[in-house]
Length: 146
Image 1: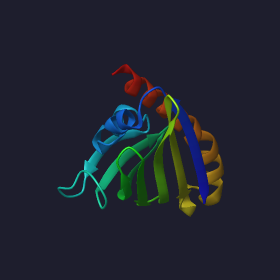
Image 2: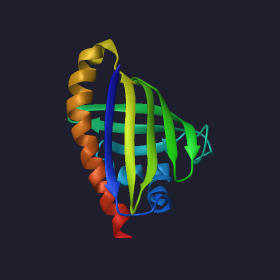
Image 3: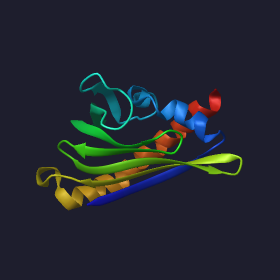
Image 4: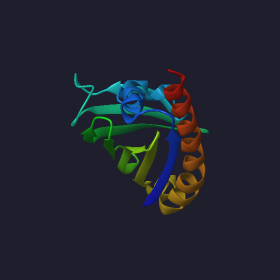
């Protein structure tokens, strides 16, 4: 299992950060690796929301199936990955005085044919962490622009 963890401080309230993060379908606006998000069913918010995320990292493309497992407005959004790559992830939003800390943690298991644990080390710890840091800089830009 690979643990990937990144965070950023944003000059906004937790509620403002949540305004941008809460609409799951808009994650493609700030996630470079998310190409498209399609909901499975009518539910688009809250616990149990299921969706497919078309993901592209370099030449690798896959569809990640996810389900929302935690949902506390302006505090936390958690997901379970149930597709090719499995595991759990969480966004936490924490006030830090005049700023807000946004943290993204994922515990992922890559299938053997994608390199298994080695993919977790190289792909997760190096490649994905770099992409997600860029994603958080983009999120910060969007949140602070409004």
